[in-house]
Image (cartoon, rainbow, N blue to C red; front, side, top):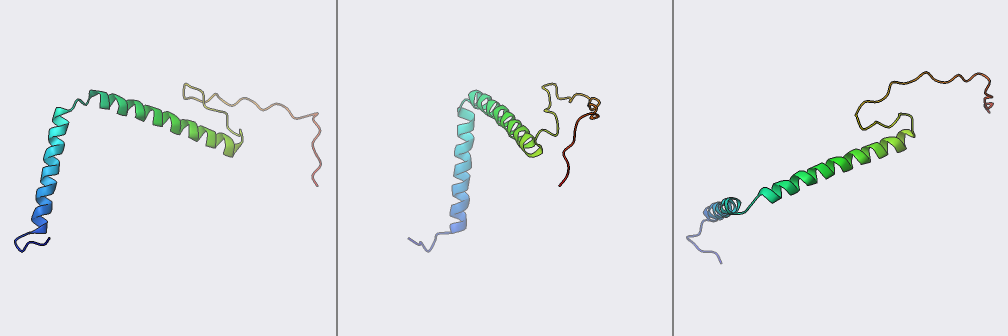
Length: 93
């Protein structure tokens, strides 16, 4: 297997050069429009999934302490809290 005239570094350099040449040829010859559309759609879906996971985690961890964010991106202004007068409170033990 070992050849006295063989230079492993030269062989690796030549092999990588051939791989890059083949990749360049493939990129120039293959249609990429459909691939771009798939990547864009996939990125959109991943973004939507991350937002859903984040809102679910926020809802479960905070247990509804913050109102969910509406579609417009702005949260409504907090309203005055209702009066608690007249409502019985539980005694602390």
